[in-house]
Amino acid sequence: MMTPPKTHPSPSAPEWLAAGATNMVADITGAPNSFIGKTVTVVAEVDDVYGPRAFTLDGEGQSLAKDARKGLLTLVPKVGGFPNVDAQWKDGKARVTGVVQRMVSKDVEREIGWELPTNLKSGFMGRPVLIVRSVERLNQSK
Image: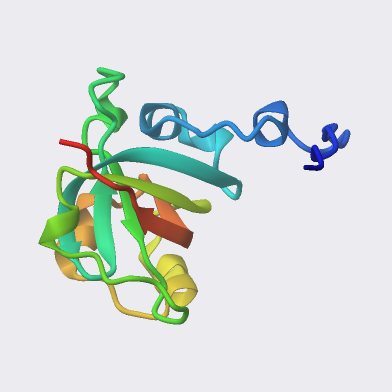
């Protein structure tokens, strides 16, 4: 059996990415300017499901910061072979890789290819959102 070669981070890759680390929801929602435009991977509990293409990831009480309380709105683009998110995902863990953007509805809608409901536009205006590049529901071991 061959051992994969050790990888070394490129000078431009952040250390956490080279190490395969995931980001915490509270880090993203608590300091969004550090993440806007960046690709992140988050493993977190699905807090609320708003439809087959919209849900929030819970910060798991990691922060009491005002912006960390609502969780991270996660939006699935219309194009792509993504699974539909339904009530079975709620309270389970998901692994999501995506790009963090600030909620400016016209920009986000252009990126995801569908119109956001008014409650999501107003409820998350100006907050960070995660535009999915890959998403998977993790096995629950309860």
